[in-house]
Length: 113
Image (cartoon, rainbow, N blue to C red; front, side, top):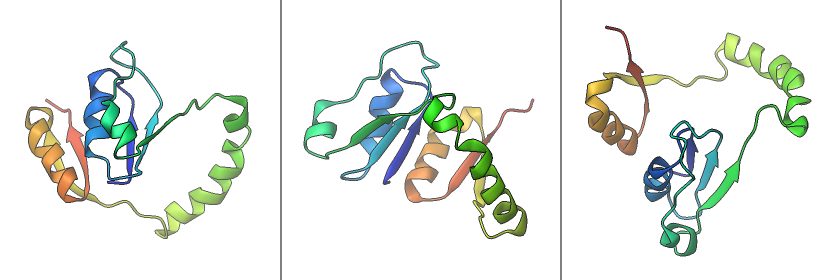
């Protein structure tokens, strides 16, 4: 997997970094756990994982949002950009969902009752 996106931080960051491919990129955008980002040093050293931060309201990013939406909304609406959902899992099937993602495909969680 070349890209990991982390909104939890803490130990979750280490888990995501661990499944990234060599020279993969890990984007951290939130810290829902309230804990600092944790990564195994060998993922940084041997696998050469790159960690980047992202903040939507950063002035450099915020100014680009209107143009990006104008360009991408028609592509999504026309079907040129598609991200099909491979499977839906209940939260109780978290391990199965992660295994599915590792095999390939986008999964979503059904959080309904």
